[in-house]
Image 1 (cartoon, rainbow, N blue to C red):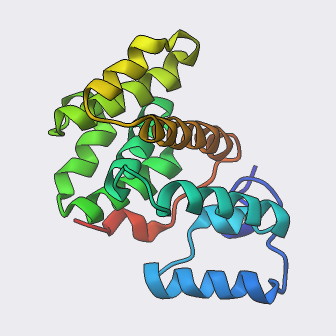
Image 2 (tube, rainbow, N blue to C red):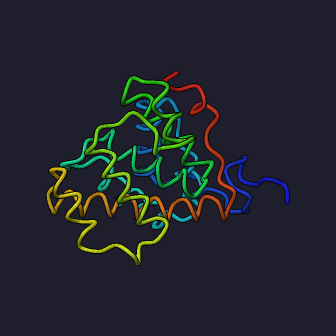
Amino acid sequence: MARKDNGVTALDLPMVDPLPPQTQKYFDICQDKLGLVPNVLKAHAFDIDKLNAFTALYNDLMLNDSGLTKLEREMIAVTVSSINRCFYCLTAHGAAVRELSGDPILGEHLVMNWRTAPVTPEQRAMLEFASKMTVESHAITEADRQALRDHGFSDRDIWDIANVAAFFNMSNRVASAVDMRPNDEYHGLGR
C-alpha cells in the first residue's frame, strides 16, 4: 500500500484540520523547541483525545521529575526499541541520547548493542531490567528489583524504569504495526 498522511504512517488517518487551538499551540512549541513536529504526534492527530492521552503519558514519564535523568529515560527508550527493532523510536530516541549525552557514539552504540555500551554499572542494571521486561516480563522476580536497589535505585525509581520500559514496548508495537516513519531531521541530530 502507498504511504498515507504525508508519509507519517501506512494508514489513511489524516490529521484533524484545522487543529484545535491548544493542539496547534503544542505543535508550534514543538516546532520552536525541536525544529520539527514529531511524526508520532502527527500520527495521533487524527483523534485529538488519543493525541492528548498519548502526550500526557509521554510527558509525565519522560519530562517530569524523576530520580532518573532525562538521558537515562532516553537510554531505556533506545534499549527497549533496539530489542523490538522499532525504526521510529530507534531513530528519534537515538537522536535524543546523542543530544542529551553530547556523545554521538553512545546513541548509536545503544541502538546496535546496548549490552556493550559504555554506561555506568547503575545504568547497566537499569537497562538489564528494561531488557528483561521487554523479553520476559513474566520472569521478573524480587531478585530483579533488589538488584536495582543494590545499585542505588529507590522503589520510585524502579516504578519509573518499569513505566518507561512499558510505554516504549507499547509505542514500539504501534509504530511498527502502522509503519510509522521518523522525521528525516532526526537522522542528523547530535552528530
